[in-house]
Image 1 (tube, rainbow, N blue to C red):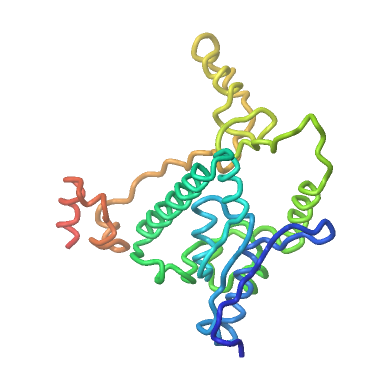
Image 2: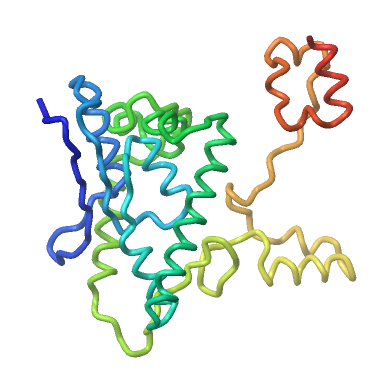
Length: 262
């Protein structure tokens, strides 16, 4: 049985011969193993990793049992971008931490959770793109209706990132590529709204409406959900209650509908 002390999980990709395990996978594996051994409450898990940098990264780590997270790479990057002044560096780091904390509070509130303690280890997520064996062993209890990759693909991606991190950097690439995850970037990820799309749309409106239809298929994440016919009013109360209206209940039509349901 583990002693009632903290357990620090340090995941640093500092060895060129060994790739780091994804922090969320390592954390979830240890967390669920301790739950199965009925000793989870005796251990506090502290994650030190270079991966977490966004609000959702911290939300996932805390949701799968992390008591604290040390995003050393994000903190070092923020301090470096602030310049050589120590006060400016400390100020920038404080702003980063404050932004993450506010983002976490907003995430908790959207889930109807008021405190960090109630959110930690709750696993209030749905996994998309992981096969059943990975979910059952490492993310036990997580809802998953769409299967996908297994440990072999996860390991391949980790090795690919590891080899990219330790490859020699030439003088022509002094900075990391932007990638284009959030906005269009040349040679980055494909997005629905890009210069080619907008150009064809404008051309279609001005001259030929069929030009826009020749645009390549849009990835699923950029695709708008299909518009379906709304359910009749009589069917909605069967699967909803008055508390489900949340903030929308402030809208007059919703108030009227809520009173009818009650």
